[in-house]
Every structure is written in C-alpha cells, then in structure tokens.
Image (cartoon, rainbow, N blue to C red):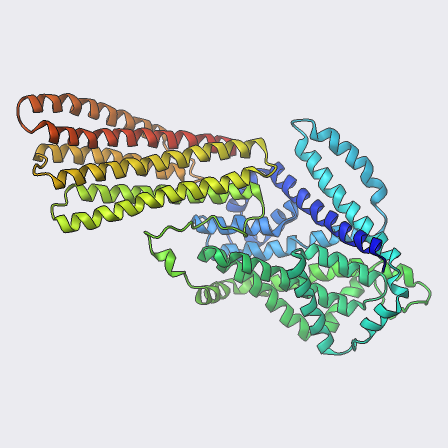
Length: 570
C-alpha cells in the first residue's frame, strides 16, 4: 500500500467523521428546544419512550445527544430512570439509520452530486434565516464526499488481489467460534481507538465489499463496534453523577446482552439477514454475478445492525424494571454526592458532553443547583441571627464561610464551562441564552456575598458587648422571611419547563422588601435619638437590613435573566 493511498484512507475517514458531526449539530440547531419538549412529553410509558428515542436519534443523527438529554431530564426529576432506559433502547435503533446512509454511499459513486450541494450550501450559509440548512447540507455533503472517497480508495487498494491481506484473513477458520470472538474484540478495540463507530463501520464495509473479509467476520466486527461505543460512553461517565453513570451502564448492558444471545444463534441469524437483503454468501470470487452480489454487502451490514437492535429491544423492553434495579444495585451513589458542603458540580462534566447546544441544558441544571445551595446558605445565616452560644456561633459561621467559597468556585467553574461552549459554532438563540446564564451566575454569587456580609456583621456583634433589642430581632426576622420567600420564588423560576410560575410574585416581594427597608431606616434613626439603643448597634442592625434589600435586588436580576432564557426556548 502506497503512502498516498494511506493518506487518502485516513483523510476520507476524517471527512466522514467531520461531516457526520456537522450534520448532527446543524440538525440539533434547526430543531432547537422543541426536541427537549418532545422528549419530555412523549415518554409516558416504555413503548412511547422507545419510539421517542428512536425518532429523536434518527432526526439528529446522534445517539449521544439523545442520551445526554435523557440523563439531564432524569437528574432534573422530569423522567424516571426506567423511562430513560426505554429512550436509550430507542436511540440504539435510531442510530442504525447512519449505517443505511453509509451503505447507500458505498453502493454507488455519489461524489459527483456533492459539489452542487456544496454550492447551494454556501449560498444558504450567508442567508441569516437559512444558514442552519446550509450547515446541514455542508455536513451531509462532506459525509458523502468522505464515503465516496473511501469507496474509491478501497477500489484503488486492490485488496482482493493483495495476497498478504488475503492470507491474513484466510488464516482465521471461518467456522470457528474463536474467530468470531476475535473479530468481535477487534471491532470493540478499533472503536475505542478511533472514538467513532461510524469510522469502524466504514472500514468494515470497505473490507467486505472488496471480497477480503467474509460476511460473518464483518458482522462480528459490527457487534464489537456496538460494545466499543458503550465502553467509550462509560469511560466518559466515570466522572459524572450517579444517574449519568447508571444510564451509561444500562446502555452497555443492553448491547452486551444482545451480543451474548446473538452469539448463540450467530450463523442462523446472519443467514436470515442475508436472505432478507438478497445476498448469496455461496457465490465466490470469479463466479458469475459476484460483483452484483458483493454490492449488497454494505446493505447486509446495515440490515444486521438494525435487526440486532430491533430484536434486542423487543426482548429487553419487557424487563426495564429489572434492568433499572440491576444498574441501581451495581452503580451506587458516590460518597461525595451525599456531602452537601463539598464543592462538586453535579451536572456539568468534562468529556461526556459532545454537543454544544445540549451543553446549555446541563448548565441550566447546574445553575438551579447553584440557587439551591445559595438558599441553603441563607437559611444558615437566618439560624445564626438567634445563636447566643459562642462556640456554636463560631462553628455555624465557619460553615457559612465554606459556602461562600463554594459559591465563588461554582461561579468560576460554570462561567468557564459556558465560555468553552460559546467557542463552538452556536445558534443566535443559544448565544443569547449563554449571555443570560452568565448574568444569572454573577447575580447568584452576589447573593452569596450578601449572605456572607450579614454573617460577618453578626460576627462583629457577638464579639461586642451589646445585643440587638427584642424589637430589632422581630424586624430582622420579618425582613429575612420576605427575603427567603424571594429566594424560594427565584429557585422555582430557575427550574425549567414550569410555565405556571408567577414571575410577578418576585417583583411584588421586592417592592415589599424595599418598602419595609425604608420604614425600618426611618424608625432606626428615631430609636437612636430616643436612646433605645446605641448608634453602633443601630448601624449593625441597618447593615443587615440593607444587605437583605440588596439580596432582593439580586434575586430580581436572576429572575429577569432566566425569563430571557425561557423566552428564547418558547
């Protein structure tokens, strides 16, 4: 094999992978948030969940995207793990459409048709309303150009006449079960190395259509690719939260179980698929009709991929509750997830997110978690107001200090993640969402600062000799009650897909806080003049009241930013 042909092979595989990625991302941009609404609404039972996973994956050409959306819904409490498993089963069927597209590309030379598509795509890209259609056309054109180049490279390699290659594959006993296992492991290893099941499928189609690789070994490679792609997702999910790891493990279980039972009926099953496609595996090279017969091999591989996943889903869909129990028993929550005061992002993980548009959904869940932590911090501050025991006060104050550090870290990490996402080619709506989300996390961190400032004021008070009056304690309690209501309303707004949130309630609470602050400010001056308490204690008292009022302003800013995000999703 010459160096030039080797570079053509590698380059055409790169074109294929880039084309598939571009096509998938442009389809997701065109679908927008509607995909998420469909996925949430159409998973009422295991069968609708399976069909939804299948159609969504076929639409966006990415089982990873479907799985990521599904896991994020499980984390948000919008789907159960059982529903998620049914969607993942459907996604396995939907992703087989890719193999059919590739087999069409291998059956005839399609490269002549891609150049007009490139020309149309570049015109559409410069049109603001149609640019995503242009992106899609570019993606699918690159994919077919890669497939066409791969097909031609396979022909130019003359693998069928290469004695060394023929001797290598003929050294394996075609009737041996060990040969099938060897090629299965090889398929899994190749998928792990190139990180693309589509690339391995393309290599398999080249080898089979050139007559070098017998169909049984080719299908064993496809089975290995099914397992290899789940190993990749499980490795990516190792740093993720419990539900993501459970979903990834359920995906692996699905494919491994399928491979095990297929191995028991391997030859009859493959022969059945060959019959369905009309491929005759008895016609050997040199016999009449060999070339026409060999042209069907790519369709045999695609048909096997589909039949395998459909049959596997038909068997396992009845055992979803048992699969759920199994994955929950094997994948237990990490200890850190139960430790509320440890800094750990729950939804955002490196490696598992491959689609920028869907990364925004994960970031939204993390921002809601940020809001929950901030409200927990405020509850600690409320308890601190009435703490008289100095030792207990110091312990509680140190917890609040820890929460302040957590809020700073969460703002930095979420902002860093959103910054990385914004580097990708995103739709205008998604860019606007990211800007609004950056404002949300900035305001949430400011709420954390206000909570810490209140705690510091209380710390100054406990070190002094004076104390607040009973009336001041009652007034601080009322102000904090209003502030707590504002935080509760904010967190309710931060949860997605709740259309019945009364946003005006947040603004009404803010008006109440402002009016109450103004009332207490005037009353405080009078009380100091009347000698009810000293100027020093009055200053600390008003510092706390003013911080609560500032906190209310930050809450309004968060809610306004979130409403912009929801308007973009509508």
